Image 1 (spheres, rainbow, N blue to C red):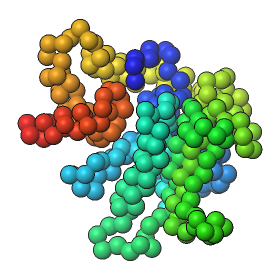
Image 2: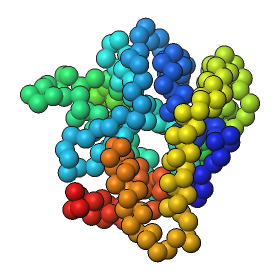
Image 3: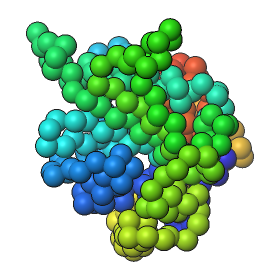
Image 4: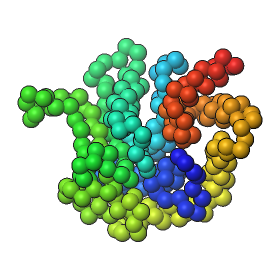
Length: 271
């Protein structure tokens, strides 16, 4: 992230604002119903930014929007505004997210049958696979017999707001157009846009964003060479205490993951 947007310029594709909007349980339910063409009778109130850590010595995962429905199905929704530097990063991230979801679902002494059906959904403001499709759905298929799929209850979906190939419902297309930066159309996109406007009128949420922005601006200020390393360590310590994973700190601060891990190790030594 080369710069921090002004509060007034935030859009639904900006992660901070998306998380706040998805705290509206009705909108979150409607979004899932629209994207997956399903009906959800009851959705647990969105648990935004759920932290998964099965072992304190392992990389923790902070999911953007983690919800379950009345049947126990698990949904993780992630907003991705820009393409990571490493083209394979989203692929590998979903693999790790799935493993952590599964580990958190099975308690000690549990059974494989306890694994719930899960959907990891990345909403991208770019084409993650450069094939022009609006939707990329992945399940585990047999290479030799592609009609044969593992019944492992795991689905990963990437939605491309800039896609042109593949038929989607009118409401899904309206939503993707909205994520791409166009004016809201249709009931769902219009209601999400109204919630965006409501959230942006909330002074406490604005103050939270401005505080984070100020921290990041200080971190990027090249003129503060003296004491910059100490400030960076303080910032990472603060972010760790709030549950951010090293990978997320790397994404937010725009510094190499190896450097983040090195600083995290220093934080643990200090503590």
